[in-house]
Amino acid sequence: MASLDDLYKEIILDHYRSPRNQGELEPPAHRCEGFNPLCGDEVIVFVSLINNKIEEIKIGGQGCSISQASASMMTEIIKGKSVSEAEEIIHAFKEMMDIYESELSGKETDGTSSSIDLGDLEALQGVVKYPVRIKCATLAWNTLTQSINEIQNIDDSL
Amino acid sequence: MTIDVTEIKKDFPVLQRHINGKPLIYLDSANTSQKPVSVMDAMEDYYRQFNANVHRGSYQLANEATAILEGSRDKVTSFINANSRQEVVFTKNATEAMNLISNTWGREHLTDGDAIVLTELEHHANIVPWQMLASEKNFEIRWIKIDDNGHLDLSDFDQLIRGAKLLSFAAMSNVLGTFTPVKELTSRAQEMGLTVHADASQYTPHTKTDVQDMGIDFLTFTGHKLLGPMGIGVLWGKESLLESMPPFLGGGEMILNVTKEGFSTNELPWKFEAGTPMVAEAAGLGAAIDYLSDIGMDEIRNHEIDLTDYALQCLVSEFGETMSIFGPKNSLERGGVISFTFDGAHPHDISQVLDEDNICIRAGHHCAKPLMQVLNVGATSRVSMYLYNDRSDIDALVSGLHKVRDLFIP
View 1 (cartoon, each protein chain N blue to C red):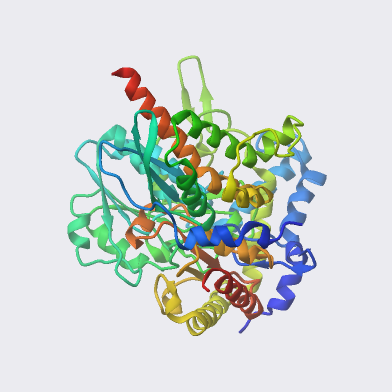
View 2 (view 1 turned 45 degrees about the vertical axis):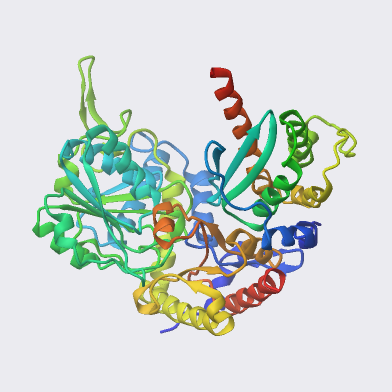
């Protein structure tokens, strides 16, 4: 049986109470909004991409402990990374969250499928035991993916 | 007279459930109510003994099925004191009933330059159908604001309704519990020539509904919030209005005659009931109405006033300034719905922690996002009560909320 301690690890509560990289970035930084229609949570990801490197990332909006902590940890690991490094991290994180996909495909979930060290983010692994909260944990990540896609589309059209 | 909640709880099988050894504390009846055995029996009985298609049988079984459907219509008719059974239309839910009004009455009466009036308290079901029609017909939607206590601010009401064609409002708010002054709003609006619709989804399950006394033109509600099954709702409208409206969905049942050239519509209420109806659900709704009527709507209302009073007092004395409670403070002016936020703990986290003790409350925007914007919150926690709740449920809630506080507010 899943217990609340799996969900509300101290590191998660710490990021929730003291979120890192909270705030806004002025244009030309890219701004992208994400919503969780289930609970009304909203996240705004600001990304400043210079020479294919995420120089700055800030988070706005409001949400529950899981969505806020996940967003906060995301900014810490993503900041300073190249786009392709960021994409690898996003992939690794979503793989950790993807309980359904791994169950459906019969994939082994031994955590070795990815060589990326997710650090503090591993604390969010307990969320998969609470399926409705997975959307909370992935909200900022999906918004970051959308943000990167939008930036690349803009670049392509230039 | 007070009601015997211990006896009532026994009629609701799901309330006997234990999960992980702990009893279920159900405080989410504004979302959907639990169902008594008599409702389930009525539905099962229908399928075991009476199942046949209605209104077209030439044999006894079909006649009995028809009698069940139409018998439930009669129960609804007297439950809301409608003038006649012709005025009671079965729909899938309250949302469909409101879409029916917007698509028939609305489409016929609203055009470029017109206006309708809603309130900031509305559920999306009484907003989006009008926005959909407005984007097509280009009429204006005006909003009655709320004051700091969650009551409608009627200071500019006359100005808002001037020149408008429709006033459509929740008789009770699903977020704040506010009872809106139905009779006052209705008479003032009708004097100015407006048609009036009351969304009674939260109202009819909890207090006596008398459409003639209310004076409104349309009333909508859903069965599943008043102990009935999901899948059936009611549109009530004044007969002359319903007569004048074009049909909604087309198909069998709603026609008198069909030729290659066209069709003519059936008489009321079947004109608005295309296709095979939800007969088992109607049987369940009828049984729910019987159950509520046996206990008495006034008794239920009084019980909820008492319980809401108790809950408000407990929350204020236990959590004081750390908790913001929205809506009217006086339980006579509100139903048994209490929305709140807790400093330092998000509604989603609150309900997650409460779930550890099987305490079921709602977290989120409650399908009332414009109201959330007015309240300046993204979401609230909402506790909602019914006839099967008592003080022990509130006590369990309070101790659960202490756990929330211990976890999130160091």
